[in-house]
Amino acid sequence: MRFYLLVFNLLVTVVTIAQTDVRMYDIISSVSSERIEKDITTLANFGTRHTLSDMVSDTRGIGAARRWIKKEFEGISEGCSQCLNVYYQKNLIKKGDNNRITKDVWVVNVVAVQKGTKYPNRYIIMSGDIDSRVTDPNDFTSDAPGANDNASGMAGTLEAARVLSKYSFENSVVYIGLSGEEQGLYGGKGFAEFAKTNGWDLIGVINNDMIGNITGVDGITSNTDFRIFSEPVPPTETEKERNARRFYGGEVDGISRQLARYIHKTTQTYMPEMNPMLIYRLDRFGRGGHHRPFNDAGFPGIRIMEAHENYTQQHQDLRTENGIEYGDKLNFVNFDYAKRLTAVNAINLASLAWAPPAPTEVAIGGIVEPSAKLKWNKVAGATGYKIYWRDTTSSTWDYSRFVGDVSEATLEGIVIDNYFFGVASVGKNGHESVVVFPNKIIR
Image: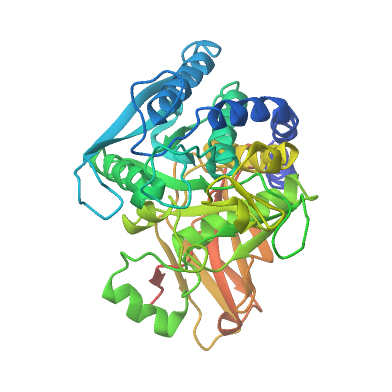
């Protein structure tokens, strides 16, 4: 009897690590380009969504936009038996806080939280920006439709909420419209502080900023390429952690970089037609996005965006010069592409929300031996663990081994000096946590 039980457990383990989750394909097919187009059109038709624009009108300005977004979230919640907790989170920014704050202003984020059934205090966030601008960052009256930057990211966030609200997750999922990005990343700063004050265990932030353009000034048109920006290591790392990296590696293995690799792997598994490009940089050269304030607070966060930008359509007054049409207008948005990147977000939110927590401690050893030894703490909800490794020059985790429901394992014949290693938790449904790079040494 014991023999048959062992065989059964082995078969369950094999199935667990080999399967893909068919629900993920249902999520992909449920994302609607028509709904995304409708939402982008509505947002663009508010005229301007500048942070300092009209807050009273029901048809124009950021006040009207955020009330409409909140109403949309509330409508989604009604359709799932009030599964979303919808609310505003706001901070007062005083005139002169920087040169783009020319008057006192409330920076108001619109939040919808889908609580997890098993780990309600563990959160994965998808964000889009509400605000828009023209050439002059302080011009809050001129038309700034912001169709791609960033109605596309906000519409994608709404659509992800519509699709994922039909499912139940073990971890909490947050859909959020962040304000004040163009004036100084204020919405992200405020919400990162809110999460920290409330003791949130933040799995990660997937920030979407411009996910609707496929034709770039580089002359390339592609509806499959997209970029994932991530910083190498957290700015909050300690001096001890920095010194350890000199001897053991990890200069490209911070928590945000692991989140980026997770998104890369999940996308290639379920959407192989897409080309996720890992960009080893916090953001575009000299520029910033709303994942950065979360990084500044020590949380993992990345930016998803189009690969081929057209700068004549970003931060531009609406005009035509020398035959070139300037401005961030609806006719430049590819709604099918926005659908694809929304689906990328949705499957990664779902995979992380269905996954067990990651180990908090991973130790490694094996000096002067033809092997690598790893130990880690077990976590609730994991049915097993997977060791990953890669060449030190590789950007992705290229090799892996499922080692079962254990807390340590030795990779015989794998020389520790030649590879980087990490450990992920695996749930009964096959979904994995983010890989954890070793943070201790086995003495």
